[in-house]
View 1 (tube, rainbow, N blue to C red):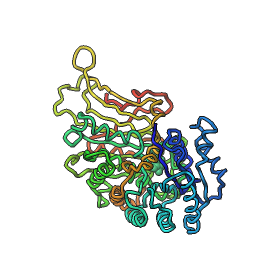
View 2: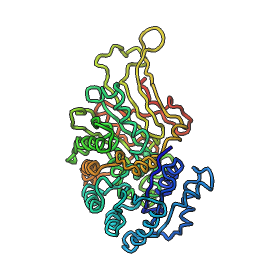
View 3: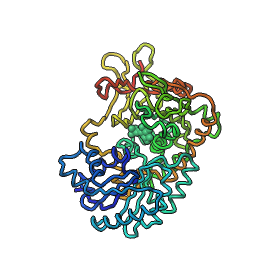
View 4: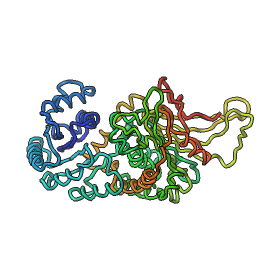
Length: 507
Ligand code: BG6
């Protein structure tokens, strides 16, 4: 039986898309599993004038597919309350305080409060101040703040925001969400690394040749043209998700899996990323791309709310150097983009060639190839390992084989969603899978140099066709070093087994 947690959750931005798509369904799953039962309440607040009844309808709609009965939905929504709220108006916090106290008593919440900021970041600071000054933080229970990204727009604004928040909350009360850290396979990186001797023993520059991280999306900017045009892929994906993955791959083994120990190692890892302080270094190591029309899809510049001359990048590829003892000399190649050929997130860890090749290649079809450990993050979840063996029959012809553990649909469907895991972690006071301020700071430091070089560069981004795997320059980035992106044979129109989509083998 799961232990019930008592808390009041106040969601700022309760009428928004994130709340509807992710938060309500995640809370509902926690409710079904018994983590939230009798002693919880949720206050939704936003500018719109909604009634409690309407709020309940919206929530019912968002959890409909997960519910077993109308009764179950009603039981759940009965814990939800709505207040129309202008975050800048002090009087509204009085109302919020009053309702919070009432609910605390009604549901026996022991003063435990979580404030979830699912809204535009420019309001984070003022909300933090108001919560403290207007007496919404309790003495007897816990007070935690969950913040959605982006945490600032660059290092300077992130620092300002952090200073502002720290007037009301301590670092250990601030839970900065990076939803990638709630994904099954991202959490599995540490499990695979630190529980398998065959990987951990080889996890360094003696045995690893290069690491490739791909976060490819097929969607364009959708209806977020306005936000995206100010943000670009570097801030939207690299500063957070990509660098978090790098940190987990690079970090030293923590002394325990406690939040503080893991996050200390990640901070050290991020500090070891070589900063590209000059425009030349940025140019040499990072590429920005933008999608143009292709596959019957419009180009980025023709998307709604996008400036027709925009040079905002919808694609980034880069080579990251890690300047520490374990990783010196091993390139970490990253790429992420919109409107790419496939929706697929994966990591390839490519091991070195054997120092001596006993299996000459001239007259045989397949040769011994470097081993690749692939961590499939989504939509496939699991691992695969490329190995070499002898082809059955006479002679010593080689065959590349793949071993894989790909979770089946049922296992995937039963596994908690990223937001569900993260909400539960926050309810339990476990910060491990949230980003510490110093991680955010270090990531902005890294990204800001690149941003600055690009902002000063008046040339066009590298264009790539919608439905491709990015601009040709991103292939040249690896080719220069004698490597190439290991792609998947992916055909979105076909039903495929994990075997079909394994990395293409060299003939
Ligand atoms: C978000 C970005 O953080 O991550 C989006 O703002 C992006 O632009 C999304 O589409 C990708 O997340 P996922 O889980 O679909 O890979």
